[in-house]
Each structure stands twice: as C-alpha cells, then as structure tokens.
Amino acid sequence: MKVKGFTWIGVAAVCALVFVAALAVTPPRGPRSMRRFDPDRLAALEVGMWRAYYAKQRVRLFALLVTTLREQYRYSWAVAGREAFHLARAAATFGDLRGGYEVVLPDLERAYGTAKSWMHAGFDPAAVAHAELAWWVARRAPGENSPEHVGALIADEYALLYEAPAGVVAEAARLRAEAAALRDAQQRSPDWDTIGLLLQRSYRELLAALSVVNV
Image 1: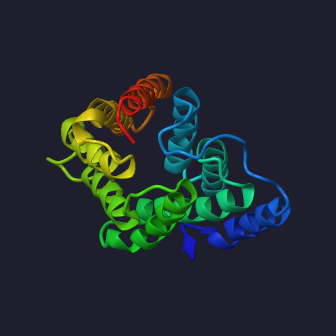
Image 2: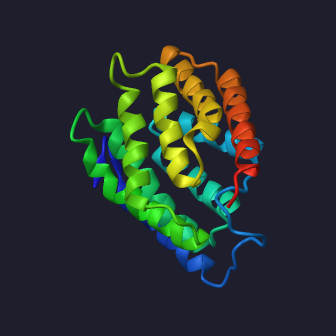
C-alpha cells in the first residue's frame, strides 16, 4: 500500500527487523493493565505522534507508536512493532481519506484485539475500534467537531476500553478533545506546548479517575 509517496513496504521492513531483533527480548517488567500508565510520558508521546501525523512523517509515527506500546502496554518489542504497524497504517490511511473511513477498521480492530489478549481485558475490540473511528470522523465534520461533542465520543471509547462509566472519564476525554480542537484551530503554527499541557492534564485526570473505578 502506498500513501502519498510513502510506501508501507518500508515500514513493514522496519517492523520485520524489530521482530527479528526482539524474539529473545522479554517485555518490560510490571503488571499488565489498561489502567496503569505514566500520564506525563504518554502525553509527551502523543504530542510527538500528532506532530508526525500532521507532517506525514510515517516512519516517525510508527517509531513513536512502537515506543508507546512498549512502555505503556508493556508489549515485547516484537508485539509492539507488529501492532504499531496496524495503528500507524490506520492513522495514515485515514489522514488521506475523504470518505469510506470504515476501511481503517480492520487495522484498529487487530490492534485492540491484541491489547485485549495481552492485558487480559474484557472489552470488545470491534466496539472500541468503531468508537475511536467515530471521534476521528467527528473532528472533520462541521457542526460535530466541537470539543464537547468530540469529548463525549472519546468518553464513549474510554468507557469501552477501560470498562468504566462514561461519566467518570468524561473530563479526561473533554481535555483531550480540547487539545485536538486547538491543533485544528492553529493548523499553520500549532502551539504544541499548550497542546501538550492539555494532554498532560487529560491523562493525569484519566489516571486519577480510573484509580477509583472497581475492576
């Protein structure tokens, strides 16, 4: 698959190298849980991924996704490389579409299917994938791209992914939507520092909210 001059064969080759190099490497130590993550580190990684996405830096986006999955999901390097490929391809493909967005669902479902298995979670990967795509699409739709509406859609995804009430994660979702709206309003020269701070607040709020939810 080729996306605006970028061939996914290159990413696949990098992914294959990661896989081969990582076969004997164990995952990072620590519990596997969707609800345990470093909010500040995750915010910093997400800013980097957003910047790579909008600059169409596909290999950098892939590399940052590998790092995120390795650190936050505690994947082995091999699993992180494989699933980062699916997530990066979904994002890059979506970025170049103007309709027919459902074509990215198989990659999203594959990635969330692995997350469910790895974390021994109970969510429905297909439902999470559809919920994520819903807020991606809403950000592009006039009249549907307000932080309030997009935030509600992100909260719907969080509720599925983290198996928590939507109301508990609503504020974290709203802050993330605000960060996205600020990026969209400043396309020529985004204030990445402020966007990063909003994401940091979002993930800190999310971690705090999830800490009081019964497993």
